[in-house]
Length: 521
Image (cartoon, rainbow, N blue to C red; front, side):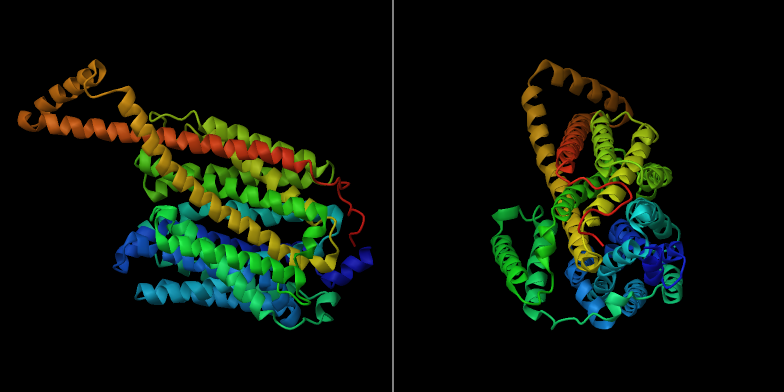
């Protein structure tokens, strides 16, 4: 076993390999989070509306998701190291083009190229990492990899807000250049293709499968991004989009199972642990990305924080994740991964419930400890779920499986963000109606409050304008309270998903800590 592992790494210290591929992943995930913060500034600079600016994210995500499952074929066809280096170059160079874009159209074109370059970085990095370490040390290696996937979305809003406020939104993309350069140097120096990659013969490219993948992924992403804005199924074009998504997805599934050389080999889902892991990572993507999106919105929309200060408020999650890395690295090879996952999801759910106790009177540090704890809990989810999902797969299947695994996490994240935003809007309207029915304008409680505010404003401004100003202030308070309760609903909804995940965890077949299960080699 040591001789086989040494042949896989060509005598290179596997931790150098881990750092090399983690840099590429960190750069890609960080860029996604930074871009979301800079959207309003991009819209203003390029004379675009906020709705048009959201295509900066959508175009990237569609290209990214389309390449994710195809990364294994490109690795077998061109060599994994060569393909990974090419992706790093494409991503870094297109980052410069995005930052220098003089118009929205050119920026969207550059973002599509950037998304295509970034799509393969996560699955390639993950498969290289898993193959470079023996099973007993994969937990510790994945703890380092988790730094790039879990901490980057937390650092992103803070760094993006600071760069945008202090310099320009363009520097939110230029920042990729030094990271990409370092990643390119380390990968070229320390990463090598294992024998089964060098000797592999890729089948013909599945053009039909790739086309169907682009269709259903693209339709789904646009549907999720624009559905709430256009009333979901109330718009005819969204109904057609849903139709093409369903047809494209069904045909893609049929093609992937029946073709001799499919772009994505879904037969890997026949492995029980991998199938359960894909289900769990999909649900994990919903809960993780929802909370990452909702918390900064809570600080910005209800408490009036700027993008930078909201990023600072949620930054302690990164501290929690960093604290959790050594713990999971130590415990991962000593305890049943199912126990660690249960702990992670349960604690994450409890803290999400605690977020449901927020009020409009909270201070900037009220939620600091719950936010730190969520970061700590994430470490106990991401690392074990990855090691146990791949633990029963043959090494040759890891590349294909990694593309499927990461695609489902990203799709889950997109669905989670869309559901959270939709739920916020719909529940705010529902709560506002409830408050209006419970406290009618003709009631004594409303009239007393109205009179108090009107009397106060009459002393501060023109008495003739006091009545209208008082109505406006009461309506603003009503909307704020309704939005607060909508956030509470979302937090509790996320907690329920986490508690449901605890049950899904125990569908995993037991894998002895630190050792591969039967069938893995």
